[in-house]
Image 1 (spheres, rainbow over the protein chains, first blue to last red):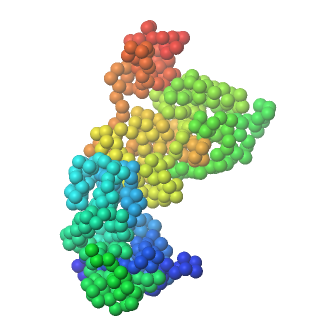
Image 2 (cartoon, each protein chain N blue to C red):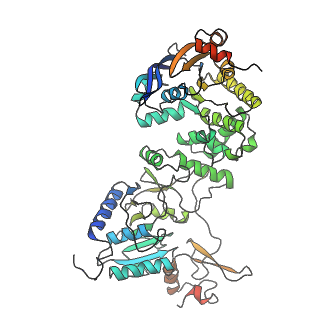
Image 3 (cartoon, one colour):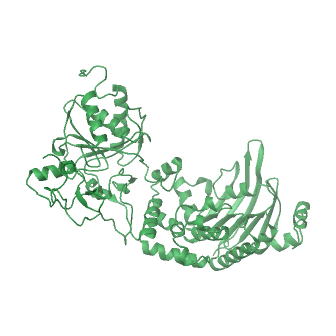
Amino acid sequence: MTDEPLLRARGLTKHYGERIGCADVSFDLYEGEVLAIVGESGSGKSTLLGLLANELPATAGEVLYRMRDGIVRDIASLSEPERRLLARTDWGYVRQDSREGLRMRVSAGANVGERLMALGERRYAGIRETALTWLDRVEIARNRIDDRPTDFSGGMRQRLQIARNLVTNPRLVFMDEPTSGLDVSVQARLLDLVRGLVADLGLAIVIVTHDLAVARLLSHRIVVMRRGRVVETGLTDQVLDDPRDAYSQLLVSSVLAA
Amino acid sequence: MTMQTTGYNFAYLDEQTKRMIRRAILKAIAIPGYQVPFASREMPMPYGWGTGGVQVTAAILGHSDVLKVIDQGSDDTTNAVSIRKFFGKVAGVATTTKTAEATIIQTRHRIPEAPLREDQTLVYQVPIPEPLRFLEPRETETRTMHALAEYGLMHVKLYEDIARHGHIATTYAYPVEVAGRYVTDPSPTPKFDNPKMDMCAALQLFGAGREKRIYAIPPYTPVRSLDFEDHPFAVQQFAEPCALCAARGVYLDEVILDDRGKRMFVCSDTDHCEERRAAGHHGAMLDTAPQAIAGTR
């Protein structure tokens, strides 16, 4: 590990015509760090994630990423093959809607094995063994390996997405509302799983969520967004327990106590 | 060009259209396995009946060519007969059912058993030219995948086969890698015929009319069937020889003879079977098989 940040966002701005998607967002992300981006609907969280993951072109600003070889690159300057290779080896992306993140028409095993096959693995037994290992790690029963995600529950699909993304040992995973639509006990298990994986693998995660409980459980640092701008950043405890900004205070106080 | 027929240009298509198709064919030959878009025309037959193959044949047909048309290996099925008659009428070219005599062979589903020669061209009728379509419905995405040679998805399909059936159960349209680069759909030929495509002496042209694509495998081009190291590519094996000509190592059709389970296996390539019988080969059921199957010879 080095002291260099893994990812640096500098003045990230996205305009959708007249409207502002997000404006002038800057932060550093270090290896093994979980950063939560919170805010209400329409605050620019997903736009920011799209910019970071190189899925949207930025209007202004840059994202600098330290590649595995230690060289820092502006992700906008990557060629298409480099961009795609990065996205399926060193990065992961867990989608809110599992149907976007999984191939629903092929089995769980093939979903987990797809990245390996894309990287040139041509041994069926090896792919299967790795897939089984990952199903174990995300607590999906081994005998479900040949079932399709269409037969899985919402929580299992999200766990399968995680396995599919982590199979290449990425260093950075983007998560877009991974727990929305799941009931509370399933959410808790998923968060527990992610927390364990972060600790084991030293993953860096950028997680977008509107659920402050998720942010509190998972993240080290928080970015609070409103109307496309960052209104407050800081350590999770600090922001949630002692918010400085008026909007952060409103957000924290509007959480229903169970 | 002299007109030999009236009411039509030679070989039905006008000369400008043929030039357009020939340009696509030349590009396809230059980039083996790459799907070249072309302005597919309406043909006097429905899509799915070989409109792509017919346009390719029309574009390359010359006065001295001898045309053979097969459908499922057979020269006498509806599709084969009507396309052969079509070109007999609109081009006035000689037609044949003998593989050895033909210079252009238009085919649906089979590659003839007899080895092809350098002076022959095989024209395939292709329904779905995109081998990645099964898993990736977006055309923009499949084009990018071809451009970047990202073919992991093809192995996902094969993985899925093994996971579900214990072996690679894809038996037709089995994906191949052409000249070490483009993954290509060999059209719905049985995988039994895939090895014949490898280093084939004849030019192989593929036309997909509805999908508006032409692709090609030039003569003597390496063609490799995709597989896994621990599940290598293998062709179907038949337990018994052809019931009419006793041929082994050829592709056989199963023919149901009655409603009490009686059946026979005969050569799918009818010309090959007839040649062998004429040469004196004698299958187990040659004398007892119904006339409709054994033919009049």
